[in-house]
Length: 200
Ligand SMILES: *[C@@H]1O[C@H](CO)[C@@H](O)[C@H](O)[C@H]1NC(C)=O
Ligand SMILES: *[C@@H]1O[C@H](CO)[C@@H](O)[C@H](O)[C@H]1NC(C)=O
Image 1 (cartoon, rainbow, N blue to C red):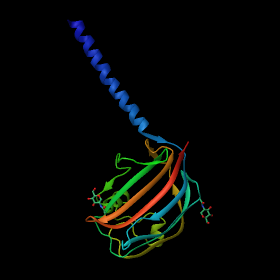
Image 2: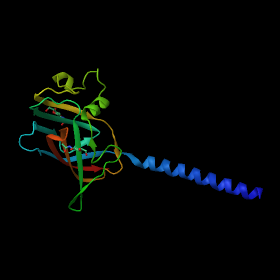
Image 3: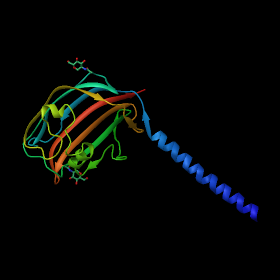
Image 4: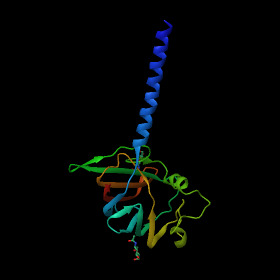
């Protein structure tokens, strides 16, 4: 009887240890570090006519862009209304699977996710009270809500893209991302971006 209990405890322990090891493996596989290339970046406005937020210029070079690596970007956008919290940001990420666009679900806040407040997202990325990151600071471009109505433009600027952990599902292939900015269910603007990813 005593022996039998030991066997059961040993088996139970093995079982639990095994679960931990399996989960460890999953965590390990969840993020991968790799050299990635972003190819064929293109963009378009997808807003309705009359949307107050319009992207006018969005140029990135070189093609392909290396991650980690440097890129040059030029951007300009305008808003006819002040952008203040809460600003919903509804993102749809589609991946080309054998010629069909397939929606990527929202996993750990990435993918096709509806964010209830982009202002909060900005505050969590860039703590309020500190200078906006370069080159925004140099050109006096704000990085927190509210954004006053007007024109915003970023002259050609070089950015360094750091070594980032890509989510496991972001595999090689073609993607398109649509982002709709809104407030109280009203669309303010829409931007669509397409690119291909190639990791080695
Ligand atoms: C960015 O543009 C500058 C000036 O045109 C150029 O010297 C630099 O090589 C470019 N950087 C990249 C990563 O293409
Ligand atoms: C964004 O998504 C939320 C929640 O899914 C929805 O209530 C809202 O109407 C959407 N906003 C726009 C502008 O489509």
